[in-house]
Image (cartoon, rainbow, N blue to C red; front, side):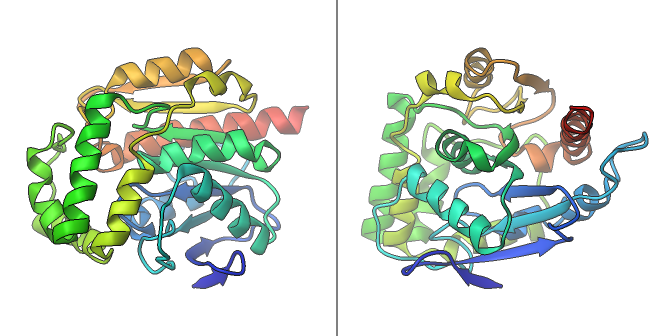
Length: 283
Protein backbone atom coordinates (compact mmCIF):
# COMPACT_ATOMS: atom_id res chain seq x y z
CA UNK A 1 0.00 0.00 0.00
CA UNK A 2 1.38 3.43 -0.90
CA UNK A 3 0.79 6.77 0.76
CA UNK A 4 2.11 10.23 0.00
CA UNK A 5 4.40 11.61 2.69
CA UNK A 6 5.08 14.95 0.99
CA UNK A 7 4.35 16.65 -2.32
CA UNK A 8 7.05 14.64 -4.13
CA UNK A 9 7.21 11.19 -2.56
CA UNK A 10 4.96 8.20 -1.89
CA UNK A 11 6.18 5.32 0.27
CA UNK A 12 5.07 1.71 0.23
CA UNK A 13 4.22 0.22 3.62
CA UNK A 14 2.38 -2.57 5.42
CA UNK A 15 0.73 -2.12 8.80
CA UNK A 16 -0.44 -5.09 10.86
CA UNK A 17 -2.54 -4.32 13.91
CA UNK A 18 -4.27 -1.25 15.27
CA UNK A 19 -1.96 1.66 16.14
CA UNK A 20 -4.84 3.36 17.96
CA UNK A 21 -4.93 0.63 20.63
CA UNK A 22 -1.59 -1.20 20.39
CA UNK A 23 2.04 -0.06 20.80
CA UNK A 24 3.65 0.33 17.38
CA UNK A 25 6.91 -1.31 16.25
CA UNK A 26 8.49 0.25 13.15
CA UNK A 27 10.85 -1.98 11.14
CA UNK A 28 13.32 -0.44 8.67
CA UNK A 29 15.12 -2.78 6.28
CA UNK A 30 18.73 -2.93 5.14
CA UNK A 31 20.35 -1.62 1.96
CA UNK A 32 18.99 -3.06 -1.27
CA UNK A 33 16.19 -4.91 0.49
CA UNK A 34 12.51 -4.15 1.12
CA UNK A 35 9.78 -4.56 3.71
CA UNK A 36 9.47 -8.19 2.52
CA UNK A 37 12.66 -8.98 4.47
CA UNK A 38 10.59 -8.84 7.69
CA UNK A 39 7.88 -11.28 6.52
CA UNK A 40 8.95 -14.09 8.85
CA UNK A 41 9.28 -11.78 11.85
CA UNK A 42 5.96 -9.93 11.76
CA UNK A 43 3.68 -12.75 13.05
CA UNK A 44 6.00 -13.38 16.01
CA UNK A 45 6.39 -9.71 16.92
CA UNK A 46 2.72 -9.01 16.36
CA UNK A 47 1.54 -11.75 18.72
CA UNK A 48 4.52 -11.66 21.08
CA UNK A 49 5.14 -15.34 20.33
CA UNK A 50 8.80 -15.40 21.35
CA UNK A 51 8.09 -14.18 24.88
CA UNK A 52 7.55 -17.08 27.31
CA UNK A 53 6.12 -15.01 30.18
CA UNK A 54 2.99 -12.92 30.42
CA UNK A 55 3.50 -9.60 28.69
CA UNK A 56 1.97 -6.23 29.49
CA UNK A 57 1.59 -5.55 25.79
CA UNK A 58 -0.09 -8.72 24.56
CA UNK A 59 -0.01 -7.50 21.00
CA UNK A 60 2.03 -4.99 19.01
CA UNK A 61 1.06 -3.23 15.82
CA UNK A 62 3.89 -3.69 13.30
CA UNK A 63 4.68 -1.12 10.61
CA UNK A 64 7.26 -1.86 7.92
CA UNK A 65 8.09 0.27 4.93
CA UNK A 66 10.15 0.42 1.76
CA UNK A 67 12.84 3.08 2.13
CA UNK A 68 12.98 5.67 -0.66
CA UNK A 69 14.53 4.03 -3.74
CA UNK A 70 13.61 0.51 -2.61
CA UNK A 71 10.80 -1.96 -3.18
CA UNK A 72 7.54 -0.38 -4.31
CA UNK A 73 8.29 3.06 -2.87
CA UNK A 74 9.05 5.92 -5.24
CA UNK A 75 12.59 6.04 -6.64
CA UNK A 76 13.27 9.74 -7.30
CA UNK A 77 16.60 11.11 -8.46
CA UNK A 78 19.19 11.59 -5.73
CA UNK A 79 21.28 12.30 -3.91
CA UNK A 80 19.89 10.55 -0.83
CA UNK A 81 21.03 10.85 2.79
CA UNK A 82 20.23 9.34 6.20
CA UNK A 83 18.67 12.68 7.16
CA UNK A 84 16.36 12.45 4.14
CA UNK A 85 15.35 8.89 5.00
CA UNK A 86 14.61 9.97 8.60
CA UNK A 87 12.38 12.78 7.33
CA UNK A 88 10.60 10.29 5.08
CA UNK A 89 9.87 8.05 8.07
CA UNK A 90 8.55 11.00 10.06
CA UNK A 91 6.29 11.87 7.14
CA UNK A 92 5.04 8.29 6.93
CA UNK A 93 4.17 8.17 10.62
CA UNK A 94 2.35 11.49 10.43
CA UNK A 95 0.43 10.38 7.34
CA UNK A 96 -0.70 7.26 9.21
CA UNK A 97 -1.63 9.19 12.34
CA UNK A 98 1.07 7.54 14.50
CA UNK A 99 2.51 10.03 16.98
CA UNK A 100 5.04 7.76 18.70
CA UNK A 101 6.58 4.33 18.15
CA UNK A 102 9.28 1.83 18.99
CA UNK A 103 11.62 2.28 16.00
CA UNK A 104 14.42 0.07 14.74
CA UNK A 105 16.14 -1.67 11.89
CA UNK A 106 19.14 -3.61 10.68
CA UNK A 107 22.26 -2.26 8.95
CA UNK A 108 21.08 0.68 6.81
CA UNK A 109 17.81 0.52 8.76
CA UNK A 110 19.74 0.91 12.00
CA UNK A 111 21.55 3.96 10.65
CA UNK A 112 18.25 5.52 9.56
CA UNK A 113 16.83 4.73 13.01
CA UNK A 114 19.69 6.54 14.74
CA UNK A 115 19.16 9.61 12.58
CA UNK A 116 15.41 9.46 13.22
CA UNK A 117 15.92 9.32 17.00
CA UNK A 118 18.32 12.27 16.83
CA UNK A 119 16.11 14.40 14.57
CA UNK A 120 12.62 13.42 15.78
CA UNK A 121 12.99 12.41 19.45
CA UNK A 122 9.40 13.39 20.23
CA UNK A 123 8.18 10.56 17.97
CA UNK A 124 10.27 7.81 19.61
CA UNK A 125 9.25 5.57 22.51
CA UNK A 126 12.37 3.39 22.23
CA UNK A 127 14.86 2.28 19.60
CA UNK A 128 16.56 -0.95 18.60
CA UNK A 129 19.68 -1.13 16.44
CA UNK A 130 20.72 -4.35 14.71
CA UNK A 131 24.24 -4.82 13.28
CA UNK A 132 24.75 -1.17 12.43
CA UNK A 133 27.13 1.70 13.17
CA UNK A 134 27.23 5.39 13.98
CA UNK A 135 30.08 6.15 11.59
CA UNK A 136 31.75 4.77 8.47
CA UNK A 137 35.52 4.39 8.29
CA UNK A 138 37.58 5.24 5.22
CA UNK A 139 38.04 1.60 4.14
CA UNK A 140 34.33 0.87 4.12
CA UNK A 141 33.49 4.23 2.53
CA UNK A 142 35.87 3.39 -0.31
CA UNK A 143 34.20 -0.01 -0.79
CA UNK A 144 30.76 1.62 -0.91
CA UNK A 145 32.02 4.20 -3.40
CA UNK A 146 33.36 1.43 -5.64
CA UNK A 147 29.96 -0.26 -5.56
CA UNK A 148 28.09 3.00 -6.26
CA UNK A 149 30.34 3.87 -9.19
CA UNK A 150 29.94 0.42 -10.69
CA UNK A 151 26.14 0.65 -10.35
CA UNK A 152 26.15 4.00 -12.13
CA UNK A 153 28.34 2.82 -14.97
CA UNK A 154 27.23 -0.79 -15.48
CA UNK A 155 23.99 -1.28 -13.53
CA UNK A 156 22.80 -2.88 -10.32
CA UNK A 157 23.35 -6.46 -11.51
CA UNK A 158 27.04 -5.84 -12.17
CA UNK A 159 27.45 -4.09 -8.81
CA UNK A 160 25.95 -7.14 -7.11
CA UNK A 161 28.13 -9.53 -9.10
CA UNK A 162 31.26 -7.73 -7.97
CA UNK A 163 30.09 -7.23 -4.38
CA UNK A 164 31.81 -10.38 -3.16
CA UNK A 165 35.20 -8.90 -3.99
CA UNK A 166 34.66 -5.77 -1.92
CA UNK A 167 36.28 -5.53 1.49
CA UNK A 168 32.89 -5.30 3.19
CA UNK A 169 31.58 -8.61 1.85
CA UNK A 170 29.86 -10.64 4.57
CA UNK A 171 28.67 -14.24 4.59
CA UNK A 172 25.79 -15.51 6.72
CA UNK A 173 26.73 -17.97 9.44
CA UNK A 174 23.60 -19.93 8.57
CA UNK A 175 23.51 -20.58 4.80
CA UNK A 176 20.53 -19.25 2.90
CA UNK A 177 18.36 -21.51 0.79
CA UNK A 178 18.40 -20.94 -2.95
CA UNK A 179 14.93 -19.42 -2.69
CA UNK A 180 16.01 -16.97 0.03
CA UNK A 181 19.11 -15.93 -1.90
CA UNK A 182 17.11 -15.46 -5.09
CA UNK A 183 14.46 -13.37 -3.33
CA UNK A 184 17.08 -11.11 -1.80
CA UNK A 185 18.83 -10.63 -5.12
CA UNK A 186 15.55 -9.86 -6.89
CA UNK A 187 14.71 -7.21 -4.30
CA UNK A 188 17.99 -5.44 -5.03
CA UNK A 189 17.64 -5.80 -8.78
CA UNK A 190 14.36 -3.88 -8.57
CA UNK A 191 16.49 -0.78 -7.98
CA UNK A 192 17.81 0.91 -11.16
CA UNK A 193 21.59 1.40 -11.29
CA UNK A 194 21.62 5.22 -10.86
CA UNK A 195 19.18 4.97 -7.93
CA UNK A 196 21.17 2.14 -6.33
CA UNK A 197 24.24 4.38 -6.51
CA UNK A 198 22.37 7.04 -4.50
CA UNK A 199 21.22 4.39 -2.02
CA UNK A 200 24.78 3.20 -1.47
CA UNK A 201 26.34 6.64 -1.19
CA UNK A 202 23.78 7.65 1.42
CA UNK A 203 25.34 5.04 3.69
CA UNK A 204 28.97 5.71 2.83
CA UNK A 205 29.91 8.97 4.50
CA UNK A 206 28.02 9.53 7.74
CA UNK A 207 29.47 10.11 11.23
CA UNK A 208 27.29 11.18 14.15
CA UNK A 209 28.98 9.28 16.98
CA UNK A 210 29.48 12.46 19.01
CA UNK A 211 25.75 13.23 18.75
CA UNK A 212 24.63 9.96 20.33
CA UNK A 213 24.93 11.36 23.86
CA UNK A 214 21.80 13.41 23.08
CA UNK A 215 19.68 10.25 22.96
CA UNK A 216 17.59 9.78 26.11
CA UNK A 217 15.05 7.09 25.09
CA UNK A 218 15.70 3.42 25.90
CA UNK A 219 17.92 1.79 23.25
CA UNK A 220 18.68 -1.88 22.57
CA UNK A 221 21.76 -2.74 20.49
CA UNK A 222 22.01 -6.26 19.04
CA UNK A 223 25.29 -7.22 17.39
CA UNK A 224 26.52 -10.37 15.66
CA UNK A 225 29.95 -11.44 16.87
CA UNK A 226 30.82 -12.80 13.41
CA UNK A 227 29.70 -9.62 11.61
CA UNK A 228 32.50 -8.44 9.30
CA UNK A 229 30.55 -5.63 7.62
CA UNK A 230 29.81 -3.69 10.82
CA UNK A 231 32.17 -5.31 13.33
CA UNK A 232 31.35 -5.53 17.06
CA UNK A 233 33.59 -2.59 17.93
CA UNK A 234 31.07 -0.21 16.39
CA UNK A 235 28.30 -1.58 18.60
CA UNK A 236 30.48 -1.12 21.68
CA UNK A 237 31.14 2.50 20.65
CA UNK A 238 27.41 3.21 20.30
CA UNK A 239 26.71 1.54 23.64
CA UNK A 240 29.28 3.74 25.38
CA UNK A 241 27.88 6.91 23.82
CA UNK A 242 24.16 6.21 24.43
CA UNK A 243 23.55 6.46 28.16
CA UNK A 244 21.59 3.54 29.59
CA UNK A 245 21.59 1.55 26.36
CA UNK A 246 21.54 -2.24 26.43
CA UNK A 247 24.10 -4.18 24.36
CA UNK A 248 23.68 -7.86 23.46
CA UNK A 249 26.44 -9.65 21.56
CA UNK A 250 25.07 -12.67 19.70
CA UNK A 251 27.32 -15.63 18.87
CA UNK A 252 27.02 -17.60 15.63
CA UNK A 253 25.61 -14.48 14.08
CA UNK A 254 26.86 -12.43 11.13
CA UNK A 255 25.60 -9.16 9.65
CA UNK A 256 22.45 -11.06 8.64
CA UNK A 257 21.24 -11.09 12.23
CA UNK A 258 17.55 -11.75 11.56
CA UNK A 259 18.44 -14.69 9.32
CA UNK A 260 21.16 -16.23 11.48
CA UNK A 261 19.35 -15.97 14.83
CA UNK A 262 15.64 -15.36 14.11
CA UNK A 263 14.22 -16.64 17.38
CA UNK A 264 16.91 -15.11 19.57
CA UNK A 265 16.79 -11.60 18.13
CA UNK A 266 13.01 -11.45 18.41
CA UNK A 267 13.11 -12.70 21.99
CA UNK A 268 15.69 -10.06 22.94
CA UNK A 269 13.58 -7.36 21.28
CA UNK A 270 10.30 -8.39 22.90
CA UNK A 271 11.87 -8.63 26.34
CA UNK A 272 13.26 -5.13 25.84
CA UNK A 273 9.98 -3.67 24.55
CA UNK A 274 7.93 -5.25 27.30
CA UNK A 275 10.30 -3.71 29.83
CA UNK A 276 9.85 -0.29 28.25
CA UNK A 277 6.06 -0.65 28.19
CA UNK A 278 6.01 -1.83 31.83
CA UNK A 279 8.21 1.07 32.93
CA UNK A 280 5.98 3.58 31.14
CA UNK A 281 2.83 2.10 32.67
CA UNK A 282 4.35 2.26 36.14
CA UNK A 283 5.50 5.85 35.61
